[in-house]
Amino acid sequence: MSPFFVYASCLGLGFLAPDFWLGNRIKKRQKRMERGLPDVLDLLIICIEAGLSLDQATARTSQELRQAQPDLCDEFGILVLEQRAGRVRSEAWKHLAERTGVETLRNLVSVLIQSEQFGTSVAKTLRVHSDTLRSKRIQQVEEMAAKTSVKLVFPLVFFIFPALFLVTLGPAVILMMESFKTFFKN
Image (tube, rainbow, N blue to C red):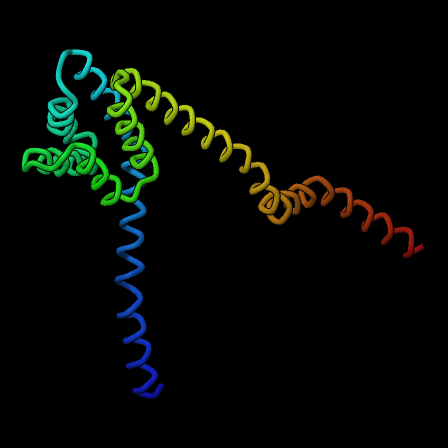
């Protein structure tokens, strides 16, 4: 190998590997946030129905669920700090959606902003959104389960069926070979 090829490959690897690693970490974090959002919304609903405002409920949720949902609680903690610093609630929620890049959080932010503008109940709105997220997750799992039968066709054809044919037809082929040997010897 020439030194130029080694340097070029190391340069290419050093340029692409961190980007790939960081992109992979971002996707995993976003997926964890999507999975944990219905639980966070449930606690938000409980806090709001207990008499807390949305800001207080958000702060309480970010404290209580720190062990179970650390990613979402970190983002909600930043949201609370932005609101305490004087940022308008709708802007702080929009920044949350932009910062995370999670589509379900964007939908939540738009639902909360509309609820605030039209004066509807935040708890009912959050409950409906939480139920929608759960049903969406169930539909995704059912879709993935339906795809498994298609994905199992190739392993069945290439690995299981040949072994099954060998076990079931092997003794018959051996008996036929022995009978043909005796038939052609005479």
